[in-house]
Image (cartoon, rainbow, N blue to C red; front, side, top):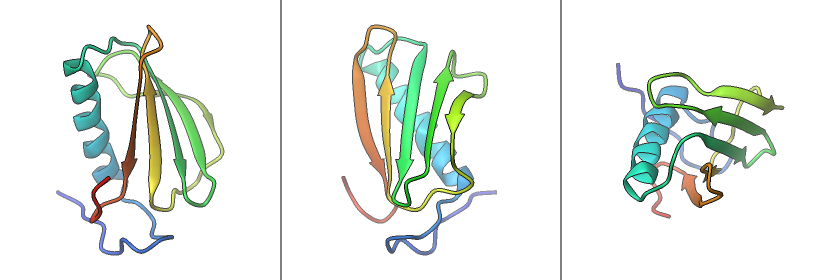
Amino acid sequence: MESHIQNTEPGAVMSRSGFGDWLITMFVGCLSRGMTLPFTVCYAGRNGSVNVARLSDLDNAMESMFTNAERFELPVNVMVVDRDSHAFISVFDPGRLH
């Protein structure tokens, strides 16, 4: 079942499945640009919620290393850092191009 975010106004709460699909696409893009696993993934929501996780491979879930979040408000800023310290930064904000 596909999930959509109906409200893209500041403060809207993100959909976990929509964000997860977007993250996978971003990780595949990072790999295609030559970044190498494992990835350290940091994301922060508009409301100050943050999470830091480690991704060892695309077949397994991320291992959360730190979180202070029960929910994330849009937009969500995401930074991926690979094992060689290369970084990719993006913004998850459905309905807007970044």
